[in-house]
Length: 354
Image 1 (cartoon, helix red, strand yellow):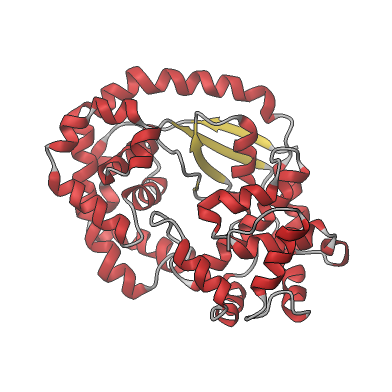
Image 2: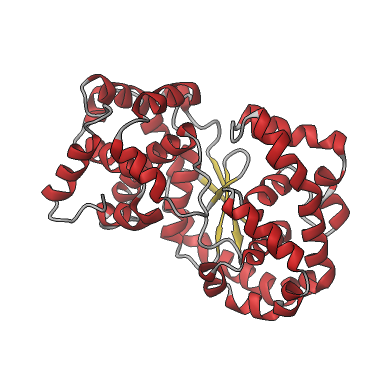
């Protein structure tokens, strides 16, 4: 069985709170109590509001970068100098560069140097400001007790879900997760996002039911479902498809799936996680979910989910093999995706978003 580790950490709530500088209506609605408590603080720093909004428009929000930074700082206390060390010290930024550019391939080297690295001192200024304006005291008093209580509620349900075994059976021996352990960091300011951390760890919002946490664990631990170099090749092959291009343009502005690799990897991960979530009983109406999530933009997820549901894995020992077969047999071919996608929704008696 999967060994669930249930934790919380101030640094991830600090990172999540900084997203409120975007003044996104959705985020304000989700985190209204925290936003209202610090409205004067946010109003006083229009420069930080403009920074956050500019980042969001460019496809990065403060949370994305700050969570990645804090994940690489092995400190779960409230020493702000330690938390900001990777952003403040140029020689330590090389660790971040290796993570972003080489390990996770989130951005190219050029994008790192021109668009990401220059933001780090500015984001350090942002989190220091929030921390020093009383956020830590607020978090200790208002958030930490809720997080402790929620973790106690999750301990029982966690024993019922063997997510590692299900993921490994789908990914195949070459891509097996290395441990039976799953670490969930519960947060007060993560919604509406789940976030993959290093190793077999992820971040999710405390307001969600544990069944939602299982679905998020499936998604985040599947990333990437197989070799990113092969995913990129398939993405480039499919990229001119009109459905894929329409879905790419329709993504919510806050998403970061801004390259063919990132976009298709998310689709493949989503299709696999939805299939497993339904199998494990933590997701009802998968096609309805895919029609609504991220404005329905994960169109290849629908096609992959349908083939998995139809039993394609009976003939393959890995998701990679199944996807390769879908390319070879014409299920995934540029110019034909829309017909297959619409046929799946029509057969289910549902209206396709595209």
